[in-house]
Amino acid sequence: MQRSTLGDVGYSWIIGLLAGLGILILIGPVLVVIATSFTTSQTLKFPPPGLSLRWYGELFNPARSAQIHTAALNSLWVAALATAIGGVLAVFAALAISRVARPSARVLEASFLSPLVLPTLSYGLAALMFFSVLGIRPSLNLLIAGHLVVIAPFVFRTTLASLSQLDPALLEASANLGASRLYGFRRITLPLIAPGIAAGCFLAFISSMDNVPVSLFLSTARTAMLPIRMWGMMETTLDVRIAAIAGVLILATLILMIVMDRLTGLTRRMSG
Amino acid sequence: MAGMAAAAAGSGGVPGARVDWRLAAPLGLTYLAFFAAPFAILLGISFYADAEQTRLGLDSWTKFYGDAFYRKVIFDTLKLGVFAVLATTLLAYPLALVFRASSPRVQRLLIFIILMPLLTSVVIRTFAWIVILAREGVLNQTLIGLGLTSTPLNLLQTELGLVIALTQIEMPLMLLPLLTIMNQMDQNLVDASRALGASKWRTFFRVILPLTLPGWIAGATLVFASATTAFISQSVIGGARLVYLPSLIWQQSMVVYNWPFAAVASLTLLFTVLAGIMALGWLGRFARTS
Image 1 (cartoon, rainbow over the protein chains, first blue to last red):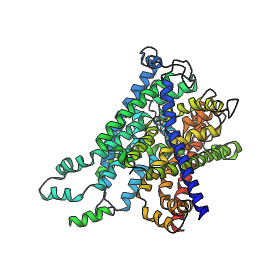
Image 2 (cartoon, rainbow over the protein chains, first blue to last red):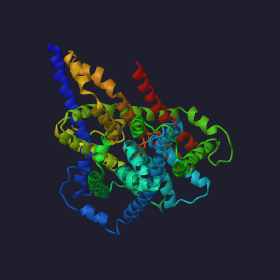
Image 3 (tube, each protein chain N blue to C red):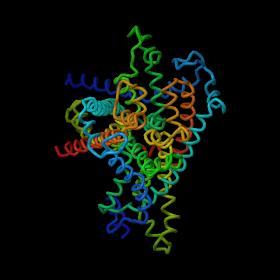
Image 4 (cartoon, one colour):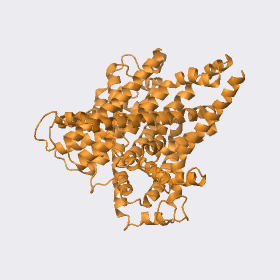
């Protein structure tokens, strides 16, 4: 009995310590980058010798950071279009197989979700070879097509989850009252699954903005994407402007996340 | 009738419901054209024998699998994935247990802390670890300040540094499914185990761990797939000395321009990840039946 209580105390300590280390490891790096972005120094020395907005000024300087601005605009454009087109296709696909118990529906579901687990880096190279064999020159449109394939599963998954929670009695009631299928979809299904679609689109957009494996192969100097540009900056000079970009992106994500949480209960959705 | 439909929906489907192919076609055809077709091309190109793609043959495959260096690259990539899964498991399980025992307010805060890195760009998370692991970085300053070491440790360009960084980068992928399943776990089973005199350790290994295994397998699959293909983290933190499949693929296709060889490496990465996923799925079935 004595030994078991000693063991129990040890258990609580070890679990507590490891959980604390987990939290530190999760949040620490984010805080370190934010602190570094306000440094006065030329280097990434931590803790920063002094605080200033110097590197943010540098980042927003249209002349000196023109390449970063172009890359950021390219990334935003590709993410917006890939999310919009991929989102619509994914919602249709989710509607097509929702509540169907047949094997064909399971096969379609697994295929539509497959880009989430297959290594996208292999896909990136495959896409480059595919477009090159077809003789299509690299452009932002190719990047949109490539991103669309890897981000559509996010919308597909959340929409399918929303549809499975929808009470079919509502649609039946609307049909019994003489509403057409389209009317029923527009007035009942769509409003009820909208939060799921929005949460999926949010994840899809973020994931496109962040995409490396596809952009690595499909983007060129002319169609630079932000993560690839940042990678280039990290490989050559350890420019402190990267920390400032990080600060801007973290703030933007934070705002988007809070807005999405208010609108759709994103944090609830993510924890199941 | 409505009641029957609702009951059927609860178990996954409405009887007699069919796939609406008109609605499935747009995404299906897009995937065929832009996802399946590129992989077919990739497979085709791997059967060219030379970099100029003039001659067909298995030369690229035999060159890749015949060379001990490339076999070691495959092994190292697998090892990196396994280490990332182990490290994230070691930290995510305690965190999930603490999450389960916390009040709703603390839970919301924890979810936020977990989602924050997930929604921060991978490139930025990698960059953060350069700031932390560098010779002048946070970790070395702290270790020197505590008197634990007199000379700065070189953690960048080491496997240890890369595993530490990947632990943070991939941990949310392990945590989210684990938290979901922890929240669904029946507390009565845990209480019963404790009431019957089992220690907390025994309760964890004999009750909590088996019950949450499906969540762990989902998380481990995502972490493994993500860590083995984390090109930016591998190339920036690992440096040029540590070679993994993604950097090999990039180098062969974009620097050396040996596309057949890059295609072989790329398909190898695909098979490696699929093998890992299947092994984890098999482990799940094995655990459920035993």
